[in-house]
Image: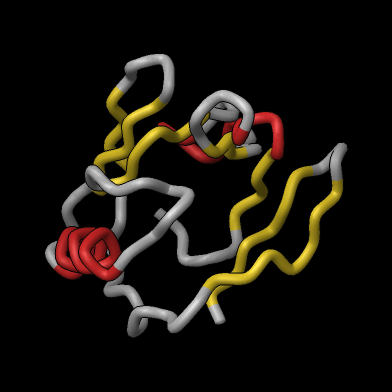
Length: 105
């Protein structure tokens, strides 16, 4: 799992998840999956518990579990510790044809 802004599509929001726009080079995240959960947490409402679960997996270099709206379970590699939890997330750019870029603040 990379610690960089992800490209998201508003179309994913209409189906109960967040659609990643991810090229083939993204391994298990390739194919623009629509995420329903990240380590059991809601991707629309990241909270301290979810961040802590992901941080724990990354610190141990264990895969982060993602569940898609079509029922697949993905295990995304995370091989570096996360930075401290951000106080908030903001949408820095929203483009209907391109999606959005979220960046921690």
